[in-house]
Image (cartoon, rainbow, N blue to C red; front, side, top):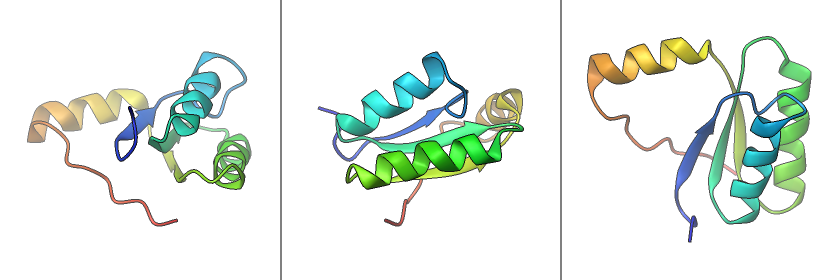
Length: 84
């Protein structure tokens, strides 16, 4: 269902909903961009967990509002190629 799709998950480095969503999407086959602002270690741990389960993920530091501003500035975002 989500195989081949890429999801940017804000708050993926936390311990709540964002992390849960990132792990669920990865389990369903999506590539995950684990967005974080200050929790680099937690984001890397989420990425490692996803990769250990056979998924693809990267950690990406950004203030979520900036992602929204860029999307409005350039239109719909392009697919993000993820190397495994």
